Image (tube, rainbow, N blue to C red; front, top):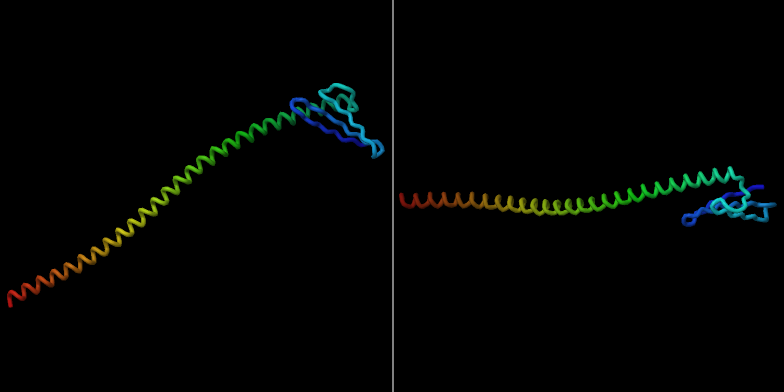
Length: 136
C-alpha cells in the first residue's frame, strides 16, 4: 500500500492529511487536527512530521522577514538612486549649457580679436596716410 502525507496550514491551525490508496481505486482520507482524533499515522512519525512542519514554518517566517527587510532596503536604494540620477541629469544639463555658452563666448572673443586686429591695421594705415599727406 502506498500513501502520501499532506500538511495544510490554515490560519494558526495545522492539518495533517494522509491519503492512502487501497487497491489503486479507493482513497481513505484521515484528517488529524492538532494531534487529536484517530490516526493512521504512528505517533512517532506524526511527532517527527509536526517537528519538521514547525521548523519549516519558522524558517519560512524568518525568510519572509528577511525578504521584507530586503524589499525595504531595495525601495530605499531605488529612492536614493532616483534622486542621485535626477541630480546627475540636472548637473549634466547645466554642464552642457555652460559648455555651449563657453564655446559661443570663445567664438565671439575670436571674432572680436580678428576684428580688433583688422581695425588696428586700418587705423595704422590711415595714420600713415594722414602723415604722408601732411608731409607731402
